[in-house]
Length: 129
Image (cartoon, rainbow, N blue to C red; front, side, top):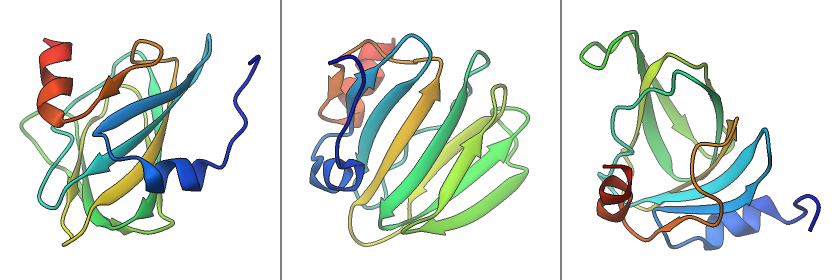
């Protein structure tokens, strides 16, 4: 397929993995994610890319900071909220609800290897180290 066409809401809601890459182009990547109650992505920073996140289901907290140790902004998010994380900003997404937090993310440029599937956060952490 030259591009990606699909029902991103359905793909996001049906995703049972921590992270699944749906599409990787030269300049953008689409992933879907699932965070269990209390689970978080973990504090991270991408100095080389911008990231767009959209919450399709659940509730959570997004944090931003200029360093890994300092939270300067906290935002409560839920269904239909969007978040833009500029390159160089430390951030985290935490599931604060009682059910799964389902979201999709656009990375520009791509962050993960094409066709990446991390069933759990532990799998993702192991692959990144």
